[in-house]
Image (cartoon, rainbow over all chains, first blue to last red; front, side):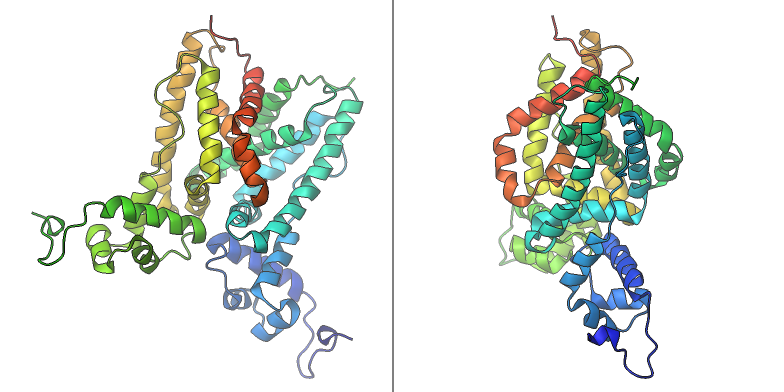
Length: 205
Length: 205
């Protein structure tokens, strides 16, 4: 029996501590990055005692890694049956995520993984591998359906769709972001069709 | 006469204080971001007294803005006479910058501009505008030379080349970065040819 399963008398168990703490962790990390990240700030924002925080995660290093692992990728595991539709869905989710905290967390952690590889490196590689694996299977299905040529590089298609979107979001001033998100479906089409035209896409029969 | 022009007796003037301080500022900012940025750290790294630092820049806000304004864009103002060559040169410079501090500073500041628009917003917009203006003129020259169709969007081409590169660098683990930089000319060709094939590029006559 772990200590987490045996709450001290007089203190009611707190069933949703984990999502609340991970959410607070991502919020604070998005705003201040690793250099400004403190357990105090997480405890305050999640309305959790510091003792409970340390009991469950031991250190701020363990906490941030757990929070990064909780991020979801914007790629859907199930193909719609059309690569164009698959990419559009991913692009719209990516655009919306970029405006929100989670997208910025992901980019921030990718940058900080270059400075603190021992801390973020593994978590970011795991996330990246998960994303690339799902994406690769969508591209292979499209090749099977004859929509794109054999030998199309899934990595290049992913870098292209995702890179164009992220670059566009990052170079959009904050006050123009609501208009960009409003316009997400149209901008996603522009980007996806740009990428598809480069790889010789043909509509599925 | 400003106080900077009248050094106190006994203290020799320090002619290269500005480049040294801006360099230290970018170095520290790249590593810790705004939340961890302090004038103390800059003074230590630049081997400059804090008084001299404050005399010249007044606040850490003014210092970071001056340092960001000193970043250069990887686009060259002069066209080589071929859009493909222009893009290759930019791509190689971008790849090399991404491995270095300045590229990461740029992305970090783009992210933090979303959280502290009053601090970074203007500096990042100025840098972006400078970059886009130079880039647009390269694309317009290529249209004039008949290399790409009229109506090609400079913004989309820039987002594409730059976005693919940055996304690729950000998703490359630190220990694979030296190989990527080594391979920069070949990877730059892959990316540039991918983008050019999407916009219907033809070699100049």
